[in-house]
Image (cartoon, rainbow, N blue to C red; front, top):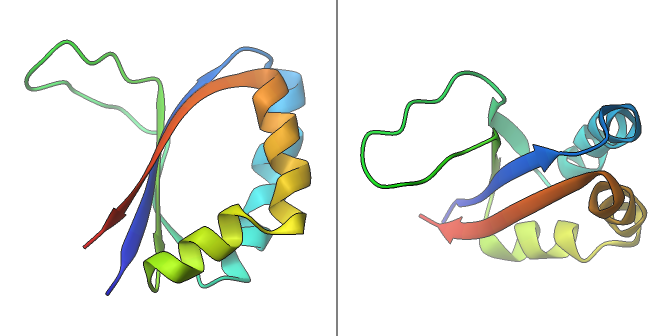
Length: 94
């Protein structure tokens, strides 16, 4: 069953975020992740949500998503992201 990582990223330091943005796709691909959406225009249809940069990554299953999220190669990038962005992330099994 596919699983999706959905992230709302509020970038606070674009120069530092560039390293994260450049390097993270290869780590996701190793776990079967592929981008469904990254950035782009959003339109809130209901509620008071004010999304920033939305990212949706599809993984083969929740186990693959969680293996990537806890992996050593992503750990380094996660630390970079935490320094340059405020992020809300959820995993959705579909």
